[in-house]
Picture 1 (tube, rainbow, N blue to C red):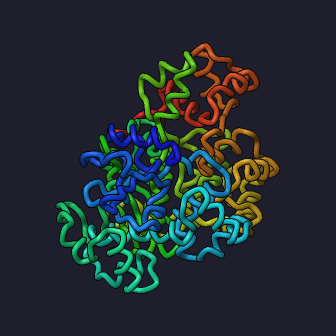
Picture 2: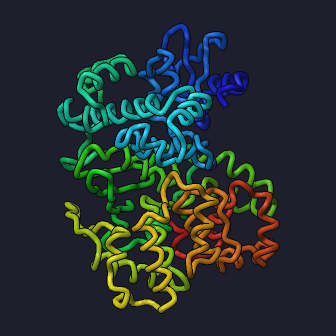
Picture 3: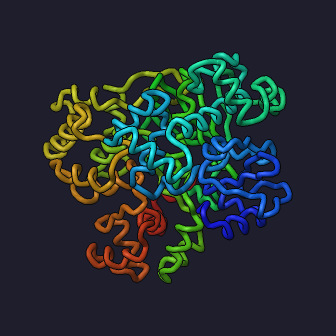
Length: 489
């Protein structure tokens, strides 16, 4: 979008928050870059230059605006609905792969050379993977500086910097303030935040309807791993350097997030996975606008706009749970999962109580005695085959997965039909166009609305909803009275 100067100027003049994260405005007369919704008086058009990423602004020598704080913008929705090399690379960078494994590690995950990845990211984002990772480290550092009392040296390494000097230089360059000055300007932490807990605000593009999002997560919560408590969804997190717990609660203009981590180096990854879980980088204006074009869907969208797709913090975990949920009720699926958690999950301490375990790894489940699994023989075969392929790496599920290829690999496994493969594609892999025409709830909703109810005919009608069919699924499911469609009380 940053190449459409006229459209960008209009967005800046109207201070339209819907475009935050889509592009950044650099002001040549001040050397500052802003989000489109910056509340200051817009600069003259001839003094504006538009960039596709904060990293590109920083590469060009601009520093972040202290008023609008562009580092807190929602992520670009481009990486939500695309499955090409750039989108997969951006999802991996957000998941901290460059900080942990460098650009060669990123290239290895994507199956391309480092030179190809550098060239592709520079062409589309104006910055290479190192610059993009550096911008992310700066955001993480600012968050730790402003919300914790950690010593600056600890913050430097927790944010992913190789040295304190690099940390100091980057913070000064990006924010035009030293780390100590940033901390002095930060508002004091409010009451109610326990020691060792980070209280964050996760931004999103409005509108956001929390009903099906949190309703789904709460209704399917696995005891010990997840719970709904005092207006917040809580769960344990398995992270690269340790583990953590998170509480997520919907607010009118943000998601309130409380994070407790065993290792602060996991902060960036934890935030990225929480945003992915709640689909916070979606663009509801584009999604709802297209779905409204169907006269039979339009009333559903108008009644409760901004529905998101409830996703996951762990792709392998969701795939296992999808198999456990085949042809059984939500309650039965939770019971099966809870038994696996107690038998094979890693115990954790939760200061607030209620959360007791991390969900078992594929390796732990692959080592389990199949005879101890209380499920029909055919589903047991499906389960053991899945966890074996996940454990030995022959099936990879992650933010970098190729949606079409992974779906084909899933369908090749015994016991995997289109419903299981597509629900994994929708909620674990993040494919916004995954569709469930064989789902009974979808067929019932389609019939009641006057849409075709046979899978083939419904699929043909849904072609007009592409590439947002996963969101159409949420609107169709919401016609039912199932608890997944209601915000818990």
